[in-house]
Structures are given as C-alpha cells and as structure tokens.
Amino acid sequence: MLLDKYSETKWGTGKDKLPENWMQRTTQQIKRNRCRTAGLCLLLVAAAGIVLLSSGGANWLTDAPIKQPGRVLVVTAHPDDEVIFFATTITALHASGSEVFLLCLTDGDAHGLGQQREEELWEAAKALGIDGEHLTILNDIRIQDGHHEIWEQEYVAGIVGAEVERRDIETIVTFDSAGVTGHVNHEGCYNGVRYYLTACRRQGVDCPAGWSLTTTEDLRTYSSLLDVVPSALESRGSANAAMYTNHDLYGMYKAMSAHKSQSRWWKHVLLTRYTFVNTLRRITPLVLDWTVPMPLPDLARKLPVTGAPSPQVGQVPRKTTSDAIAARQLASQALPRHHDMSEAANRRGKFMARLSRRVVKNSLL
Image (cartoon, rainbow, N blue to C red):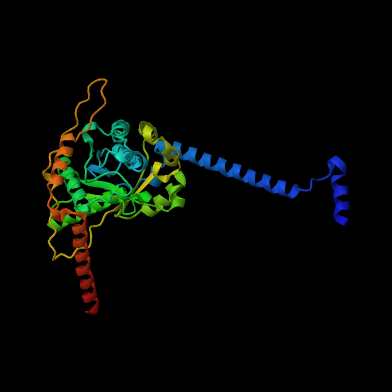
C-alpha cells in the first residue's frame, strides 16, 4: 500500500506510471552498456597494439629473441601451420636478418585437398618472405595427415636430420609436446625433432639448437593481443626462453588469404595470441640410459632431395621434393620389420623398464 502510494506520488499514474518490469529492464540495459564498453575497450587496445607493433615501438617490451639463430628451419605438420602458429616467429626472424627455411611434413591431404593445399602453401610462403628454394613439402606414405595418424619418431628424426644437413641448419623451431591444439601430427613434429636432437647429442656431433612453440591455456590463447605483456614478463632473463612479436601483419594476412581451403579458420586466427606473439622454449634432449647404443637415424639422410624448380610464367609452382618422395616411398616398402610401430613400442617399453630399474637402484643407495 505504502509502496503503491509512493510510486504514484513519484512516477504518477496511468501512462506515466513506472512499468512493473522496470527493474529487469534496467538490469539488462546496464549489462548491455557494460558489454559495449568492454568491447570498445578491447577494440581500442587491439588497434593501439597493432599500430605499436607495426611501428616497432613496442620492442622494448616484447623482444626477447633467440641469440644468434643463424639459419633457421621451421618444422610444421600441415600447410597453414606456418601462418596460424609460426608467422610471428618467421616475420621476426626475417626482420632480424636470419635466413628461414620451412619443412612441411605433409601436404594436408586428410580430406583429399593435398594438391590444392600444397599450391596454397607456395603462395603463403612467398607472402611470408620464404623463397621457393627454402621450402620443402613432403607427401610420404609413412607420414600422413590425420588425427589418427601416429608418426614413428625415428623416421621423422631421419627426415629432419637430412634437411638439417642439406640446409646447414643452426636452429630448429617446431611445436611443443602438446602441439598447441593437441593435434597428434603437431606432437609428431616435436617428438621427431627431439629424437633427432637426442641422437645427435648422443653421438657427440655438432647439433642445432631446438626451440618449441609454447602451448598456453585457453584463456591466454584467445586473449589475442592482451597476452603480449604476460608473455614478455615470463620470457625475460632466461636463456631457455625466447619471445617474438609479429613484424609483418599485412604479410601474415596475405599468407592466410592464400589458404582459401582453410578460410573457416580465419576468425580463430584473429582471436589467438599466436597472431601477435610467439613464446618459445628450448628443447631438451630425452633422458637416456647411456649404456644403451642409440645410433643416429640416417635413413632419410641417404635420400636425395631436389631443389625448387623455377616456375614458368602462368604456371603454378610444383613441389620441391617429387624425387625425394618417390625415393622415400620405395625405401619405406623395403624397410626391415624391426621398423614396425609394434616393435618400436616394444623397444621403448624395454628402455623404460631399464630406466625404472636404474632409478629404483639409485634411490636405494
């Protein structure tokens, strides 16, 4: 009674009377205003960050590069990985004067688009400043694109070793053990590179430095440009950590536009931190039982790899490794049985058993 009388006194009666759902409407309006304000702030921050990164004015905050990377090999699993995940590192390395090579272990033929995606990769690499002579694309029957395709790390290590020797590589950059997205092929890149570095170290020869792209939790992954500051803070003052910011956003956009078959991923690319910042961690070799001989995988080292052809006017560039692909296919069919995945798993199981016994023995001393 008193509330109704107060409402009539303050707001009047009839058409001027306060609506019954005025509280709900007011709350909704406040929420809408907050969302608009937050969205506007994010756009302003993103715009300011893009301008800052493009002008190089944020270098004091973000640059924590690899020291003396020299000739760098980026190892990816699929066409478009070089844009979605590694464009920031590639553009920053080019800006610092480093020579960048790209090894793509598959042509992305999981859905029958291998030929198209290979041609798209040629255009994307060109947009990122990677010369055709520095690009290698494989179509190996033992390394195929797919969420259920488990790659044998020894075989991948041999291919990586062949490319390192052929290109005189000083630094390798690839995915980390989580593969950023959890894709099993991304993890296969890391496992193969790490196996190669371990075998190389075991033989006591000169090894390139290995670096992996850090996987972050979803909140940071989709925080876009806002993750630059925390990434810079965690990468400072450590010899085992590095960080790069994107030095050519326009080149990255052109490279992504070249992957027309993957256009559905563009919106995800724009929202991720990897568009603007890459944090890298040094790859450490596997823990080894040094009494067990571990020869450096050299199967792929013996296989020829052809150089990039000079495309004629009006022609689509062709793959650089047609001869190597055929050779690898023949070599794969002629491999002895001890290279099968089941036997490889048995060897790894025996190795882990020996390692466990050694750990237990040391703990009892």
